[in-house]
Every structure is written in structure tokens, then in C-alpha cells.
Amino acid sequence: MEFRRLKNRLIAKVITRFPSLAKGFIESFAPWESEDVPWTAVKKSLADMTVAVVTTAGVHHKDQKPFNMVDPDGDPVYRIIDGTRPLSTLMITHDYYDHKDADRDINIVFPVERLREFAEEGIMGKLADRHYSFMGHIIGRHIAALIDHEAPRVAKRLRKDKVDAVILTPG
Image (cartoon, rainbow, N blue to C red; front, top):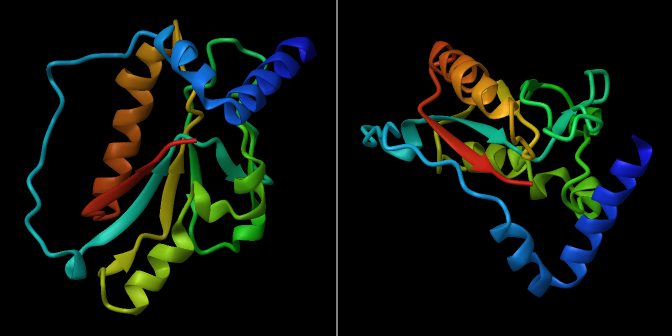
């Protein structure tokens, strides 16, 4: 299985270096489509909102179980990110994009420091204490688990935490 991880990392590096190659690679994946996408209108000003981050960049605390890079269909299970812990406790486990820059500055894919600054300046209300991370490469048999189980669990947790808005960041 180490060969598969090496291959995925190589593809990510090549696509990062030669973006024109990415188009064909991306088009080889059919997007998931749904006619039942919920939409909620904004009812508060940003200055009154509690905001959380949900990322598909494979971010997790170093003491958490890394995302599964062996399963070719990905890992649909989310990780809870404790926003009260230092950013130095975070790492990225994801072979499907080149995250060397994000490894140097996690705010590239998980911008909690920038959001904390917005809260301090009064631009937004409050940064949530809990955030959520997924691995962005979910295909095949794991799509149903992600859509039917994991994503609704995160949505329920966000509502319980009284989060008003979510910043979604890709990897």
C-alpha cells in the first residue's frame, strides 16, 4: 500500500507544478449532485455571528488518529478540532494535494488565526471553540457514509454549539 501513497503524492506534486494537467484529472471524477441541497438565509450580521471552520484538507491534532491514506476510497470520518489548543498541535494527513505550504502555515487551509483576528476587531462576533475536518478525497462506497452519517453528525454538533456560519475550506 505504500506504493499507492507514493503515487498519490507524486500526482499531487505534478498537478501542483503543472496546473494545466489538473483539468483532465479533475474532469475524470464525476461530481456528486443533489437536488435537495438545503439553504438557509442569513438572519444576523457577521458582527453578531459565531463562526466555525469545516475543512476537507485532512487537518487533525497530532494526538488524533490520522486520516486513512491506505483505503483508495478515502476516509469519511471527521475529526473534531479543538480551537482552544495551539495551532502547533495540528498536522495534515492527506496524500491527494500538495500541502507543503499549509504545513508551514496551517491558516492556508484552516484560517482560525485570521478569524480570531476578525473577532477581536469586531468584524465578526465569535470564533467557535470546535471546528471539523474531513479528508477531501472521498469516493466510491464512502460517499454514502459521508453524506448520510458523518456530515449530518457535524451539522448537529454545529447547531448544538450555536454556530451561525461556517467557513468551508478545501485542501
